[in-house]
Length: 141
Image 1 (tube, rainbow, N blue to C red):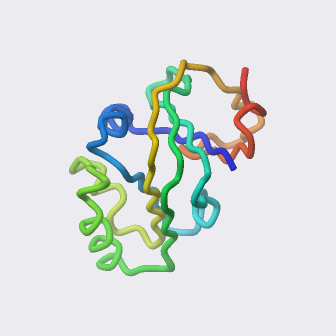
Image 2 (cartoon, rainbow, N blue to C red):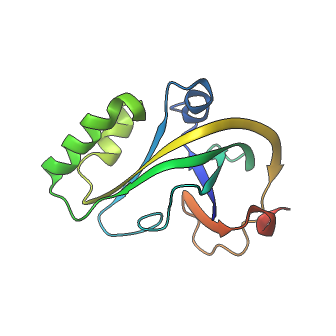
């Protein structure tokens, strides 16, 4: 399964993944929403910065995926804090994710820069920061 993942350009997430100072991605929500339950070991992630440039710049393989059950705010904050060495989140990002009822932690491996390419987002109604695309070839422009 392939996924297109939008990364926080301000927090330099893509640069941190490429340098190896960040090895884990987080997503969280009040309810179970993508990618909860949909990311598995071996899946490929294709990364785009969330700065409107709209091009995939790197890819990585999913090394591990953790999908939480419903948590209290305290449990959620403790989970983020425990994984902060791999997540390498800014204070702003910690505020955004810590405290969510459902958290997904995705550890990545083999992060590689690739020749940039644009994707066709027309079949995705509501633009989210995570697109489940099955096969990346299906969304090439």
